[in-house]
Image (cartoon, rainbow, N blue to C red; front, side, top):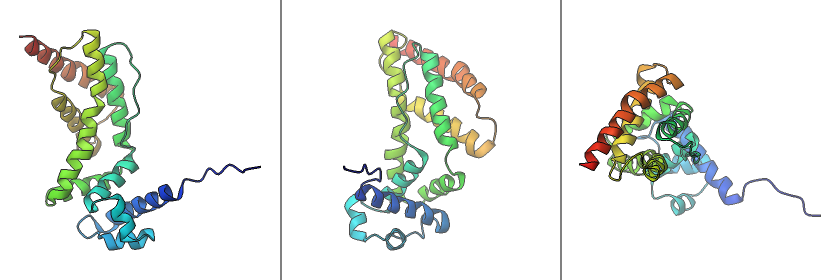
Length: 201
């Protein structure tokens, strides 16, 4: 009788070890002082193994932080109207954001200011994910006739990300459901209705 093995495949386990080592070193020494040699040593992996999976330090860091934070949002069910859909997506974004390590994330943001490769990678892999989180919401609203084509999806994602980030890591003000409802009712819905009116003109 074959015994079921629930352990992750060897390749997956090796990847997790490398990403864990990346996060540990990022926290201990910072992005600038972290080296590929140090990551390989900490993870008991060869640099050849690392480079077969990642092009460089910037991509590894973004992958590690994203994996740690549960970056990929689960698909949200369609609640039947735009307001409820926005609230559901914001709650999922809020929950993912508040699970992140503040020091780790702020250190990453600081390093972006003087490392062009890191900045490009973060913007491509992480900020685009936030924009794509709203794609199903806007697609469903368009299908229901609540919104026309041509809504600026990037602006919506940037606005929401900035406000949630500010509350979570800068001002320390509540990031509760009451705030999310206020954000939807007094900022997002008026903005989308205004943009919808412009699109129809």
